[in-house]
Length: 550
Image: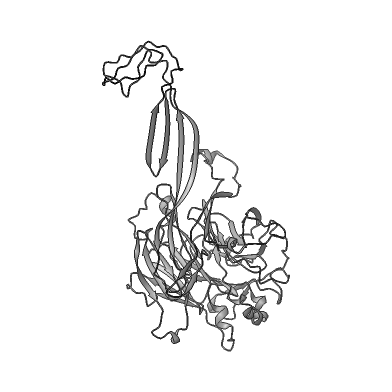
């Protein structure tokens, strides 16, 4: 990354634009545990995802539930002229509140394979909003579901002689009217009405006869009827209903590890010159990946999918690597990337062929000769990849490090951040208790200047990825994120090979965690997400959702 020029505002900005480290502060917590409270397995959060606008946040748990949160600090700031007249900057940070929740998946049993399918939510993917209704995809190990969250309004209006109930549901208006003929209501206006039928109709005490409708010869007195009353809303209730629109099942023989929606470019909503006819806009398809295959779906068609990547060998004994994660390019709908258990990332172009056996680019970090061990391939396995918003960089997370790749340079990552280097002497113990197979997620800030990932003891790390930046912050998922923060200076060091232009930062003291404390492998922060436009991080610590802003 050093000496490499990138796009404006991206991670490869010039060293003169190095920003100071962010001062992270606690914002909110949902589902906070009390001291000594036991956490139920089904309540542990297993997925976190912001939508494209950042106004909504979704979490999934091991009990198959999806919980939605909505932003509450969104405000109408007035016209542009009013904003320009203000001589101060609004510094209020984003705040969220609970919106609704629903049961997405239930435990199942595959009788053909005698296999239990747990309800745990593995991944959540937001889809495009249509007609004000939120929509998202959620998946467990085998089944993907497409959900729409609808807002239902109920109005009750009262008139003097009419009781009206109106229910608005999915743009359909139903009106039920019933005439009230209470003889105790007296308003003398001297008018009369007639009916087209000879059936007796009740007479009102004011001299008017009630009818289902009035005759054409009815005369209205000057000034109208004193008894006429306009409807007055007496109650207004709003409820949210989640409805499963489609189920995408029976397409994966192995556990689904990731889904990714091919959403439209973020600038579509703010740039009138862009339209859905542009070549990089899709919004209709998504991919799902398991250990050996990646399938391409259309949101409107659940009966079939297209297999675009298949790494299954003819003889399973020849299997050497599996797919660990897949994600669509955020700008170009024809491109996607997927990672493998060998630590490689492949970028493919759907325009090349129907079955993408051949990749466009291969990003692979080569180990130094003589450094291989029994754990080399295990710790090299990539657990998560994320594209930067501009699509120029890919962030990958393996067990030991974070790596930032430039899609135009496949020789080596432009930056490497040490996260678990202090655990290298303990790899044998971590292998015995299976902690070495933990899958930590990663995320990038909206401006691409910082990256973050989780660790043990409910800690997460934030690194600055601008050349020359020494930012390396360790935070704890608690109301006091700096409680265990130690002032351990971390320095940037260049790789021995200047051609790789690699930056390594964040090395820690052996046998301790990033704060100098003994770590607890049973307490881990696996899932976190960065707000798409602001410096706000949401992370999951067991069943609690913490948010921090800077």
